[in-house]
Image (cartoon, rainbow, N blue to C red; front, top):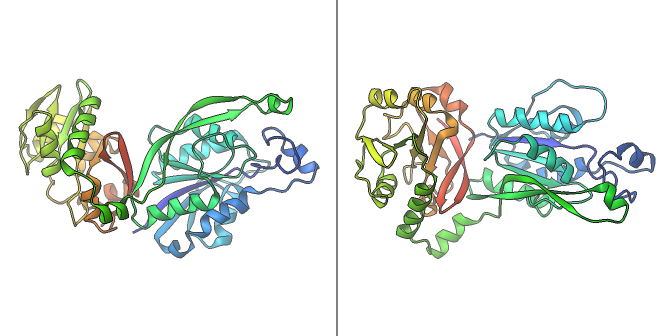
Length: 371
């Protein structure tokens, strides 16, 4: 299994702290003139050191030089640089360009090192639902998108790589007006939200306690699904007991082992063939709802061949939803999701971790491996 992680380092983050400049935004030259030394690389290294034992299981995508490539090379990680080197100090535009390229490349998690200014830059261009996590390296950290420490960031990334369940939530991006702060006035401003992982541990907790009620969770999932169904969109319901029970809770009679299509509160096609399904979704707004085969981990290519590569492409990878309770995920015993669609190019284009609806407004991030 190989997971792709994105890495962006703001080399100027934190420069102003040790020389009492109350921040680093626009103050890099002044800070360096006062003897400040960069700290972002060192703090990022603390996070990545936890991942060294798994170097053969992951690949980094990053930007040149101090924005990531230099550190990854020195630590012996496998990485790919997505931009040509350029002279001069890095800018906010560099960070934003890196975020856009990394998320377009389908990284499972985008790690970025910096402070609130860096979080603002990430937030400005990150697409909704792209998992990101900040490694704290700035002078001020008001935003709720950073781990509590560099080591904590590494631990969360490690949990993902080892097949643990990583819950996703929305974290606020906030920033203090540094000019006002230097004048003795403190106030932060809200700039938006980012999708960030929070403390995991669900796999072990569910195994030990067994407190999750399958019926209750399915009811909650059905309520969430009912809330997000959009008019005019065709929802493809894959086979399996999870989706069959969800449909039943919503008042629909679906086929347990077949593929059905829901639109505007009614089943418009039952037990469709691949050709019928393609005709229904080609050129039409649609979403694919699938579950995972318990104990095996397949989400595509086993038992749902009606959802063919051309169907997936017609619907779009961004519209693929995996629905599974945490109890069902524990049957995988830490093994990754698997896809075997019959189209290696499509399988490789899937992200190396998929978001899973596991409860009411609860999303998890789970590793995926193409066969």
